[in-house]
View 1 (cartoon, helix red, strand yellow):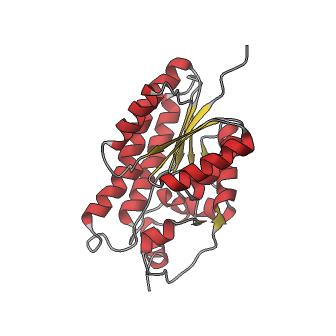
View 2 (cartoon, helix red, strand yellow; view 1 turned 135 degrees about the vertical axis):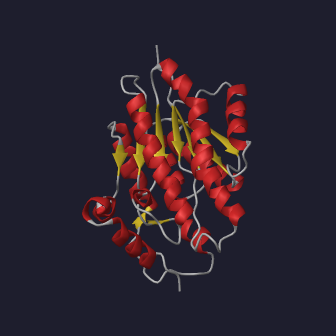
View 3 (tube, helix red, strand yellow; view 1 turned 30 degrees about the vertical axis):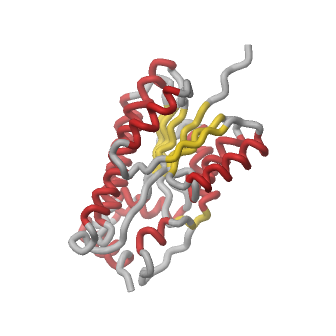
Length: 261
């Protein structure tokens, strides 16, 4: 009997790393559930992937900054009898600027998207994976999760949560056949910077990887069962900073890097 195709849910799938991860999983012939705010962009991507890979692609429009969205996504898929085998928690954003000067509500929305929605979606879909003894969670964190981030304090802290949560969950699920991986990209060519800084620019610009290169690295590492993946040698070195430098020196270095013109 022919095996049921794997179904992969990807949040933040309308652009950037999420879009490129959708292409990677589509190439595996996985069925896809695309979740994001931009319906038009997702429908365009869905049409391309259906045609090029002959797969089913289901689109769900949702704003994960709204607290009710994660449950609504889960309920819609349950009602449609769609079983999610792999959850890719990719949606996330950050803001540049000092904590006291940035709008508090927007910073709370960072926590809602980067942490609360990620945890809730994991909590909703994971029990089924455990019961079926198959599937996995791919969280998209950041090398920012390894260091404190002055001038992006909430964003860096949110990615530290993702790092810790992913590691703990992986250990809890050892022997369950359910994989957990944290993908930790560094600067990447996406719309992230535009959202984070609006019209402002950093004093220092780092070399950026393409979203496609990050997605390919993460997808391959996830398929190999890795617990974490850090694309790019420079980003691997950033992740090692806490072992090499005093915390005070790291804070000052990151503060200098995140300073805006």
